[in-house]
Length: 76
Image (cartoon, rainbow, N blue to C red; front, side):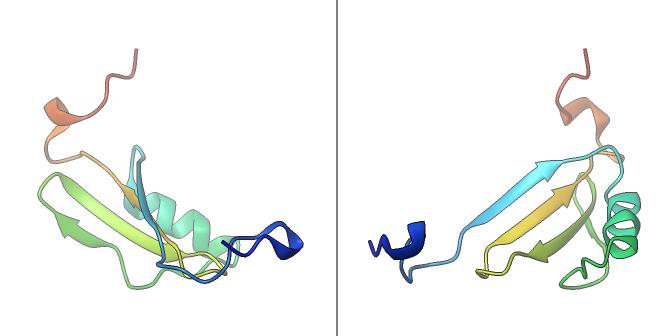
């Protein structure tokens, strides 16, 4: 690992998905803040998802469970 400037050196990009109440609303909010999604929100088995990339090429996904709320994390 290259630790110059406190950053890791080149390596494979990471992928992280986070659960949100509404992925399409998250995409709109991100767009209003100048963050472009990699593609339009798309349907997945549980609802909708959208992905963005950080400056280092890591992909951050936001997904909801609107179609399968029983699989969602508890909100309590």
